[in-house]
Amino acid sequence: MTETPAIHIRDLVVGFGKKIILDHLDLDVSDGEILGLVGASGGGKSVLMRTLVGLLPKRSGQIDFADNSDDERRWGVLFQQGALFSALTAPQNIQFPLRERARLSPGLLDEIANAKLEMVGLTREDGDKFPSELSGGMTKRVALARALALDPSLLFLDEPTSGLDPIAAGEFDTLIRTLHRTLRFTVFMVTHDLNSLQAICDRVAALADGRIAAIGRLSSVLKSDHPWVQAYFHGARAQKLGLGN
Picture (cartoon, helix red, strand yellow):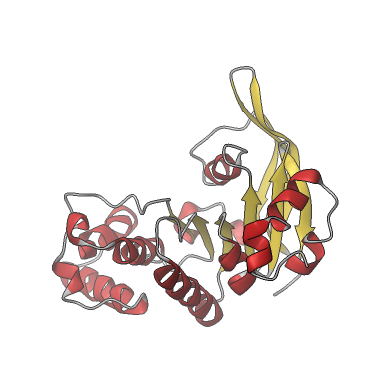
C-alpha cells in the first residue's frame, strides 16, 4: 500500500433540496487499502458512494482519482442486494459491462464470464441460472464477478454482506480479502457489519453529521470521543465481538 490516495475528497457538499447530506466532507482513500465506511442509517454512506461513482451530483467540492482512475472502466461497483438484471443469466450479467466497453467475440465473452464465476467460488453450472434462481449468497457472488469483469483497480462495495446469514457473510468477507490480496485493487466499502470491519478492513471511517467524524485503524477509531462513534462501537453488539472493551 502506497501513500498516494486512490480517492482524494475535499470540501464535498451533497444535498437534496434544502437538506444537506454531506457537509464539506474531507476523505482520502489510500491506494491498495480496504476502507470501511460506517454511519447511521440515512446518514449519507450510500450517498457518498453514489456521488463518487457519478450517480449523484455534488453541489461543490473536489473529488480526484489517482492514475486517471476516474475512467469508469477502471471501477467495479457492487450495489446493495446485487442489482442483477433479472432477465439475464449469471454469465450474461457478468458479460454486460464487457459488451458495453469492449468488442469481444462470443467465445471470449463466455471464457471471461466462466473465469470470473470461478474467481468468486461459483461453477459453470451456476452460470445457467437466472437471478431468481440464485440464493442470496450466490447473488452477491455473481454481482461481485460482474464488478470484477473489467479488472478494475478500484472496487466500490455497498453493504456487501447485507441480507446474508453470519456464515455466508463470513465467507464473503474472506472472498473479498483473498481477491484483494491477489489482485491488489483498492476497496471502498460501505457497511454496517461490525464483523466485516474487524475482519477485512485496513482502516475505518465513521460518517456522522455529514462529515468524517473519525478515521484510522479500528483500534484508533474505537478511541474517538464523538457521541455517534461511541454509541456504535461501544454498544451491546460491539461488546459481543470484544470491541470497545
